[in-house]
Length: 132
Image 1 (cartoon, rainbow, N blue to C red):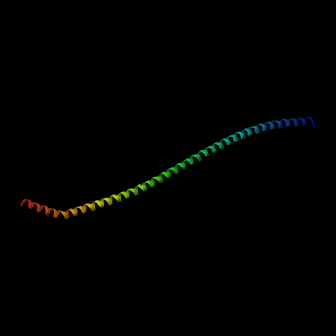
Image 2 (image 1 turned 60 degrees about the vertical axis):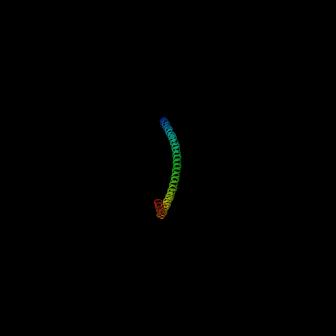
Image 3 (image 1 turned 90 degrees about the vertical axis):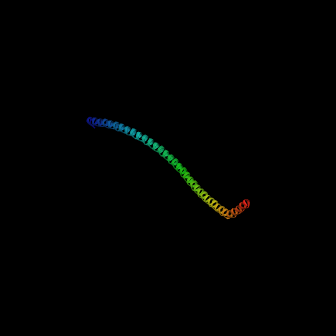
């Protein structure tokens, strides 16, 4: 080996050391970028998990509220149906009572008319006796 070969080898070694340092710096930069992206990815996963949990909680609350509203609606409809039944029953009872009162009134009028003529005739007889 000649001195020139040795100088070339040393210069190649120096060049390779510089390339190695550049590669190490690039690797270090890439590792920092990877760490930064990992950290960001973990943050996003955690944030998405929290948002998903919050959305699930809100969904469950909304479903619970909906079930309560539906139950109240059904209960209200049942109360309305019962009240409508009660109203129809009261209307029938009122109609029956009105019919009963009408029938009693007609009966009383018939009885009065039956008794009217004999009573008037009897009173006429008293009047004649009193005037005679």
